[in-house]
Length: 421
Ligand SMILES: [Zn+2]
View 1 (cartoon, rainbow, N blue to C red):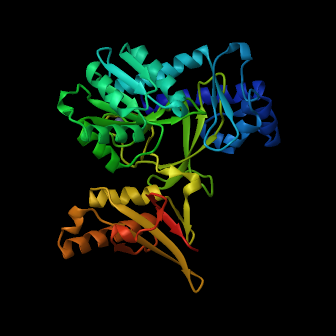
View 2 (cartoon, rainbow, N blue to C red; view 1 turned 30 degrees about the vertical axis):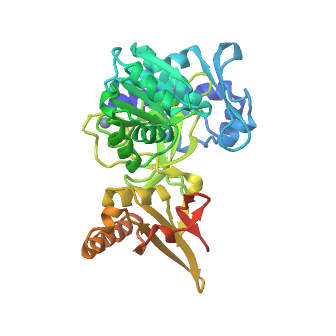
View 3 (tube, rainbow, N blue to C red; view 1 turned 90 degrees about the vertical axis):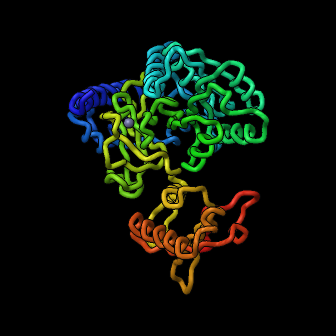
């Protein structure tokens, strides 16, 4: 698909969806009227910028069925989602939505060379069942042999991987880490497994965690981004180049917006992912604010895809830190440290006030391999991190190497941000 072709598809589909929600969903009709918007006058994707956003709160207020754009008799699947914060929302699919979901997931899996020869084990705990459904339908459409489970037991999972000659495992990052740790402490030899790839979905993970899973399980790890409210695990995924997420832009119109100005960000700047569904029938969403943060990658991907490519999910909008007018996310800091140290290190940002002035310090507890380096090498690394932080955020953030014991803990975990302002 060429870029002009993609733009043409997006324009036509945006026109159609805006007009459809205006006609079928009272929530949108009232909202568009309030903003004096006539979807009949929509001409080009940029026109979408004058349209209002949809939030998770809107879905809660219209719970259960008031956001649906089709009569309930046309809805063939209904997925409740408790979400992480209280009030429930519900997501619906028509028969066509189910096909689209399967096709989009099949596309993701085919891009990773999964064929009907593969044995695909999908294991998600209950909270992620929406992701499980979507990926399962994609794998089945390809014709792979699918083993869906809801096991939360790494020992049993290892047994199945071995006995069923599973080639592809799809699960959450935390489960994959647990599995890798279990394998390390077992007598099993990872080379006797047929497992070639692990596809992670449901939570963000770091590059160091990816490396740990890859080295322990002897696999390649790929990242899939899911938004339950939008279409589950079909919105974006990595290709084989694994250089970031590709959004499936013929089915989702994606904007990466500055959380303050709500205008588009430049490549490299962090912004919120805002999605308009282009083909979803039961629950179309206009400019849905996901609350997830990422940044657009400036270079095109070697795979040649015309789709928007972004960094992995860097965190949630709710976790942004504001320091002297600059906003940054713990995930950005982590990514930058990992790129320089090439290992997993513990770190913590301290924020406090001295005579009314905001102060900041990044404390890093290096791994043993870094501590064994010469002092001058450590110093070089420390300076490099400071320089990169300055380039990234435009403010000086001093860096200090410390012992892990001096970092502040909350329960068992180290806090990323300690804000005493
Ligand atoms: Zn690519």
